[in-house]
Image (cartoon, rainbow over all chains, first blue to last red; front, top):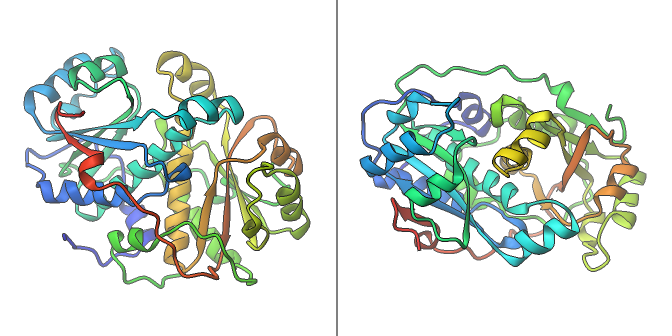
Length: 186
Length: 186
């Protein structure tokens, strides 16, 4: 098991940024497996564990994703550098895809993928790896390139690799804009 | 800043379980603020930061949530013990609520709430606090009880408090069932 951390959680979170520049350096399978292991233990609605991780290292497949599955206005040139592209999918189920949207209107598999995917991201960060969630892409194209079965919904892509840049911290809302007490939300 | 951790990330993740039994012990505001601070730094689609945390400590409001906002078949008696109920909301925006569902079909605010909410959960875990995501509840009732403005979507509830039980680990799928290589998904 890889272990290079002496950080507490808040410091891990503070040093994580979305990485948009990567070294030409392979990511060891052991590191990737540890990221998926962290995601495997994530909570999910009714413990249904819908999240799946497709680890794309194959150069030809990554090239095709960059060439065919990105949106015209969002070319993301840095994605071509990343040695790994991860496709995050959710297994379709009766609860999440049929009952829940009808009863509560909430697609729980999206929350579940957010949770599990962020476990992956934080574990990667601890191992010195950079990641970037990619929400805007052509899901149909990516599905075809990666031959994802129809029983899975492709939800997000993610880049993974060793950062080639200093972290760039995006501004955040102050705490008082996101936290409210009791019935005092405005 | 609170700090009681010497754990690496995978151990933090391994010790987190959904907590369904709580001590009658107040959770200090400082601890709650640190959980929200961890969530504040979470990534979000286009850095829109839609997630909001309503911290419900007021006994009367919590009692009403338990009495009126839970589903008849899912009474969750343990929720009455929890000294804090957190309501996770997402600010409605043109991108997430109008454009995204039309273009990609993905409600990004649900992924964002999953990510930020899990930062909260993991920080709570490090501070010795238990949490449980609660997806199934009457959103309309909860909105009314907490007087949540119409510009916010209420997405999830979460219990928070000091655990009164030994952790109960739910079974997980093995790694090979959730991780696939390149175009080898089955």
